[in-house]
Image (cartoon, rainbow over all chains, first blue to last red; front, side):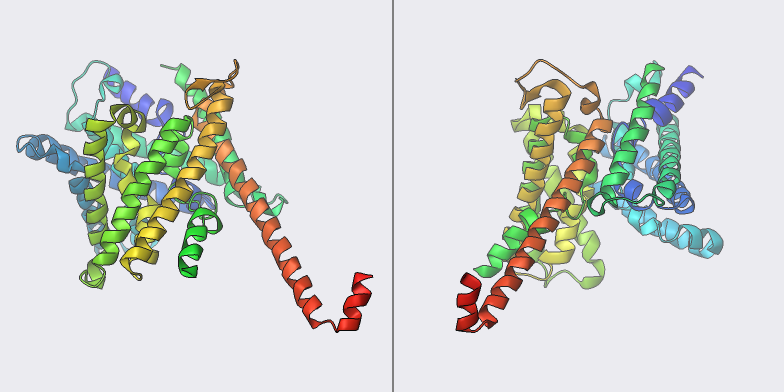
Length: 199
Length: 221
């Protein structure tokens, strides 16, 4: 139970993917203009992160380590992610057309999202500081991926809410677009800094 | 020759991947809190981008159009794996400071973007120049922001202590976001002013050419 709470707090608040690790900034700045699309992107990223971790962690632990081909991890992982994204797209298209219509346009973008490759690389590395004494296994890896995705979604939704308000401001031309979004993001980061005092 | 000049200037200034196109933001924001790691990241990307552009351009007639993106990703991932092994053995300090972002060069939009937009349509030498120019554009942008962030965050530049003060916020991602945002705004403002001035000057020159000799004397007076 202690490990569960430690992972949830670390993944969502103290080690949030966007505000602390700065992974997955492209969709964070690109798809956060409207709350609905930010939520869709967040859910899609979370889904792919969980499934990708559930595939790559056992692949690395039980196939690549015994065969001593750990150096191929980058190539293997990016291939798994690309294939998974294509597969999820096809499965969604067949089984749930409404969900596909809501999420379909975000799915192809996820292959080149740092957050997905980042989480698969993180869970095979040194995770001891998040685990509160427990040993790493597949369950914890998938749990970490799930809550890292939820943390990503939370920040996306907060950001989109703020950007919807910013649209009403009159700004000088050079500041419009990316610069004002970055300054807004910086305030969210500052707010999340407070959580680092929890642990 | 004129073509090469245009490619170089586009990569370094007019279509700078960091300031004008805002690509590759994750490593930028993650590493500009220290000037040396920002520069190390930039130089690693220069090498990988130049090599990947050359290889993709050399293979552009061999790779079928339908599977080109997976092929590019395999080429880039292979190069990144080599770079990672090289840095781990040869420059362990840089390997440590880049951390997870070294593996994430695979999904850096600049590299895939140049492959898709430039290397699969142009020759090997042109692609190499384009890769070098874009990589150096990325490097100078990161180094400049790294110097600003590190100076404000710890009073030092490239690890050399200059002044005894620190603003802790600039050592965190929050400070990186602010510096990056303000740098983009300044760069866009300067570029717009320069281009407007150039247009005005071109118009003046055109007008002078159209004047008759008598009018020219009048203008001079």
